[in-house]
Structure formats: C-alpha cells, structure tokens
Length: 133
Image (cartoon, rainbow, N blue to C red; front, side):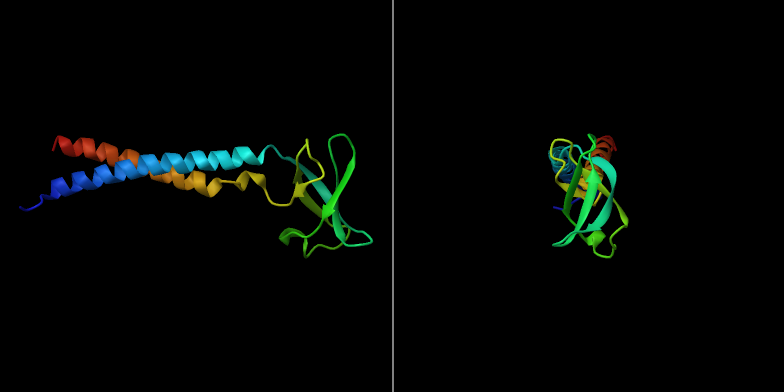
C-alpha cells in the first residue's frame, strides 16, 4: 500500500495543526501569566551610592520617600558612586527594585506561542485546502 503525497501532506498538516494550536496557545497563556504575576512596575532613575557596608542603589518613590537596595546586579557592577541607573520598583513594595526591564518577563514564551499558533492556523488552512484537491 503506497502513500500518496497528498495523503502525507494531509497527515502532516493535521499534526502541525494540533501541535501548533494546542502547544502554542498553552505557551502564550503561560507567557501572559508570567508577565501578569510579576505585577506592575514603576520606572524611575536612581543613583549609585557608597554606604558604610556596600554600594547601594537609592531612588525616590512616588511619595518622595528614599529607598535603597544593594547594587549587586549585572547592570550595576561597572558603575561608580554618583552614576545614574534606571530602576523599576513596585508601588506596594517600593523597597524592592530591579535594574532590568520587566516587559521582558515571559516575552520568549509569548513569542514562541504566537509562532506555533500561526503555524497551527496555516497548517489548518492547508489541511482544509488539501481536502478539496
């Protein structure tokens, strides 16, 4: 029993449709969840300062209060006291800051999810077209 090229293309399009749509949707939802779990961050400019024990990052929150955290991130190792650095903090917990952009949280998962979903949609359209050929 020989397999026709159109039959093989139909089987492949069904597999790609199922994998693309299911796995792609799951990855996209997980990527959105990762971004949502990280919460809202407020961007501000901070300054590197030398304290008695270590180098710290100091910034003002929305109420004008000064906060600080250790300057132990990759982005701050090469900075000297007095240099400015961009930080993100949470309004509910302003004592915690981060020096990398929170918009990148889950971005890889969202991108892979979108690509797989697009492949699934294209494979589904291809499968429908192959039914009428």
